[in-house]
Image 1 (cartoon, rainbow, N blue to C red):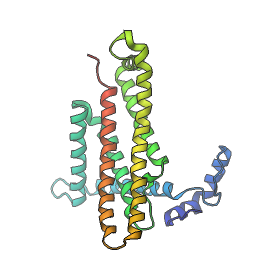
Image 2: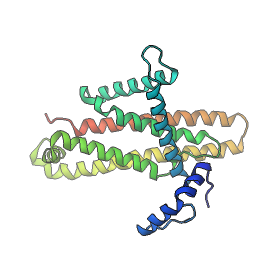
Image 3: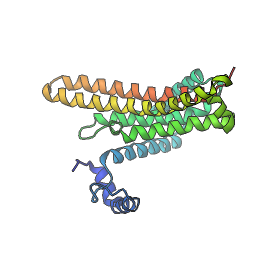
Length: 244
């Protein structure tokens, strides 16, 4: 039985019975029926609630004349994301700022949660990065279909030359599947291995070294969040690009 922090225990107390019943009906009985909601799921739910609460607080305290520190911080994040979107996608990149920015904040907070004693980074569990990657995969393909139309997007995947379309189409489909895997595996592997190394070395040398690994963890957390922001923009750019 895995260790559960207070929020996971609360969710299982409130919703555990209903979740277990639903999973059983779906043919996916949980390993531990008394607490079917694992800690990493509770942790990502908590991150989602923190983001929603932060958005509500920010909305209620917006000010043009006297912006608070939180507002200034979020304006920096939004400006950074807008500049990134315009550089990667071009002038049409602004509509994607909300999705990419939210993903970046969510992943950064999930990664940084591992710095809190007794908690782990939810992104060190494969299901969380995979879920985020599926959202990206669905979104950029949707944008490609929306931009070109269904037949136009399929033609886009066939490449610029009809003569090699029979070769290009399966290559492009395989490449798209690899993007899904690379997005999820890159984040999962980095956070999993980073957390393992941090635990091993800090247990061997508990003086000074933990502070160094915490700094590295924070840097890696923000770096992986940045990568998960810029790659979706790149994929959207490729999906919506016009053939020349």
